[in-house]
Length: 293
Image (tube, rainbow, N blue to C red):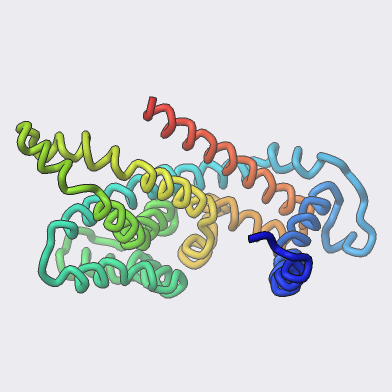
């Protein structure tokens, strides 16, 4: 049916509030942020900004603390994304075979996902703190150490704790996504493979993985974006310390914007991060599509 002008006007009026809200709170801030990245925009020049072109971008790329934060974020993503996906897929494979208490198991594994990042981060900080629960257990219960281990006072220790939290929080989401995908795989394929003498391993690599490739790509892209957006856990557990050694891209951006007032620098950093994520997404799509050929 062709829409009349009256119907088109009614549709436009119904969409107008949503479009205005999207434009005001999404499109305009992005444009404003992009403009800010080309100006010297800080506490001292908030009412009189000076155009400096690409200087903010040059400052970001030449900043050793940004490079450290970028390496930390990349390392966090490389560790947590495969960790979440592999464990989540493994649990999904197990639950897909479970008949009794399937809903209960799903709820149990999904609980970390709906747990507040702030609450979970505070719990991990309490457990791994120098005077925390883990050190008490190691010293006073197991007597494995004679003094407290400073888990969160080193770069490696702080990053490992954040990675452990990231994997723990993301397993449930991956489990639900992969379980839904597994239930769409036709059982006839497995039956035919069994007749041909294929074992569980061959079924997994030749039937299961190819059948859920689209879901794997979706999870990979979404988790990569999530890895580059890690903020709360680092802010609550280490605060970026010691000496910004555990900062991620977003925590460093937050520090530059709201602690030093370098909003132009922070704006440039946000668009550099966006560009990096776009490149990574394209690479992931290309790699997955090449496997189809």
